[in-house]
Amino acid sequence: MSQQVIKAGPQQLEKIKNYYKKGAVSKLPPGAVFAAKTDGCHITAYKSGKVLFQGAASYQEASRWGGTGSGSGKGKSKTSVDQHKYAPPKDISQSQLIGSDETGTGDYFGPMTVVAAHLSTAQLLEAESLGLRDSKTITDPDIKRIAPKLLKLCTYSLTVLRNEKYNKLQAEGMNQGQMKAMLHHEAIKNVIGKLRDQGDAFDGVLIDQFVKPESYFAYLAKSGKKWPSEIPIYFATKAESLHPSVAAGSILARYAFLQEMDKLSASLGVPIPKGAGPRVDEAAGEIYRSHGREALYRSVKWHFSNTQRAAK
Image (tube, rainbow, N blue to C red):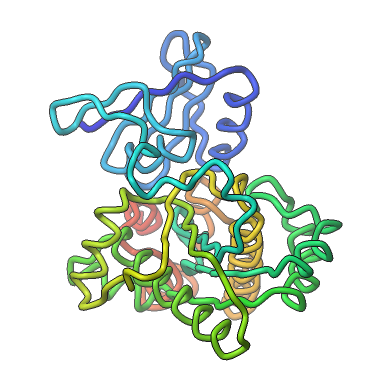
């Protein structure tokens, strides 16, 4: 089984615990203070500060927290995921960038949403009072309050992959990484077009890193697309903390996801929980019983293990 290990201090450990709380499990191994499951990954945090990520998605999940101290899966340890030639320079916050981020990838219900966003120097000054930061650190009510104001300020593009199409692509062999690459590429391309039409300059693009840059470009090539070499592009984990344009993308992607979840809840007539934990299984089972298999298929990421539990 592929696995990654990181070391976390008390504050980061608490952040990790809060991030995965929807998938928390009650049975803990000796010495553990927290454990959770997501699709493709089992996370266990220990009193020592060691956090173990196990499963197919272990590398991706560990990279959310600044890389890995050690890993296995290909027979050798991995260096930090941020150590590559596409890493942003230290003064990246001074650049005029298009930032791109996504959400909904680990949620059983609801779509994957990606937003690429650009804020000019003047717009950034106006947006300062909004407190732009990673949407995972902002409550849903605050997202709904901040996002409409942000929409009026920035140049942005939203791409949405709803689950009926997601399931079709997944069944054809496309993984989440490739889906996300396509969504990011389309959103970024749209913003570049808008900025050029408006005559607005930008210095490059910063993507909140979800795969190695080489994999990102390989995914584009697999779909017949190519990154324009004349436009600088950077990748970094936790990019929301490096540049406000990525934070803006994060907030707007979350806002779009919440809107989609509200629509889904209204159409099915039941509250739809987020994440992939036990409450999600209960909701999926209720929908399966009351609306049938097809309605559930259209609403969820079918390959998640929640489907098997719901059917029972």
